[in-house]
Amino acid sequence: MYRVAESEELADRIFLQWIQAPHVARNARAGQFLIVRIDDHGERVPLTISAVDGDLVRIVFMAVGKTTRQLSTLRRGDSVRDVVGPLGRPSDIRRYGTVAVVGGGAGIASTPIIARAAAEAGNHVIGIIGARNAGLLILEEEMRGICDELHVATDDGSRGRHGFAADVLKDVMARQKIDCAWVIGPAIMMKVTSEATRRAGVRTFVSLNPIMVDGTGMCGSCRVTVGGLTRFACVDGPEFDAHLVNFDLLMQRQRTYPEEERLSLERYQEHTCRCQEGDHRG
Ligand SMILES: Cc1cc2nc3c(=O)[nH]c(=O)nc-3n(C[C@H](O)[C@H](O)[C@H](O)COP(=O)(O)OP(=O)(O)OC[C@H]3O[C@@H](n4cnc5c(N)ncnc54)[C@H](O)[C@@H]3O)c2cc1C
Ligand code: FES
Picture: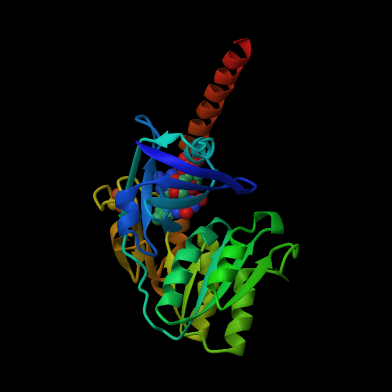
């Protein structure tokens, strides 16, 4: 069992948890992920390792469906059944020169650990974070503390620049030379943003989030197409050269099980309601 050491709601439906998982924490590097299983009957969900502190690993996740909602109910002192990791290849951190680390929505979760590693490797780090509105913007202060410059954008203009992170990145690239970029967020955001870096000739990494099951290259559920070749995101990624990724196929495959996901959430919610009613009756 793995103890939850800290649990906090950072923004609407976005949660941060520190979990005691020494074997993961000791070996984790930027860009890697872990797989959590809450209990014996639970589904396995992949989540980025957002930070490490001693024996603790930090996850930051959006409660979108059954498992992430159930995870969000855990409090300090609760436990999860399994934490497997670190999984995937670490980010290709080198001394590139000036790097941009761009995060959108819950994808911002992945940015501090990459920005910190890039800064430690001697790069000038420009952080760009974007969300739908100010209430959904996360980890801003932490990113400000790590990056040499931080730019903020919101779709509705409620904080920072009115627009998308991609717009900010285009402005930054127009003003100065960027040697390498990381772009992490929803697939559509990664697709649009990496079109801008392709035009500017900037080497770009994206972290892909296809459906994963085993996380060890055995089941094939996480297959993606990169440069016309089939890759398994769990062992060959999750980071890939953005300009070679077939994002349309990724988005199509992410929507494979909408009915199963809906039913699973409905059953979970019915079960939670029944438990709460039981509690009220004493
Ligand atoms: C390498 C990797 C790192 C990730 N890191 C983060 C993170 O740091 N924070 C975060 O909020 N989310 C992250 N995700 C996405 C997260 O795994 C899904 O949101 C989660 O699995 C949804 O499960 P659910 O039961 O709550 O929702 P469901 O209702 O089951 O699914 C909602 C949507 O989540 C996706 N999804 C469902 N099951 C899986 C699965 N087994 N693997 C991957 N995606 C799935 C599908 O697109 C689906 O449509 C990451 C995914 C990958 C592959
Ligand atoms: S999750 Fe099974 S092969 Fe990648």
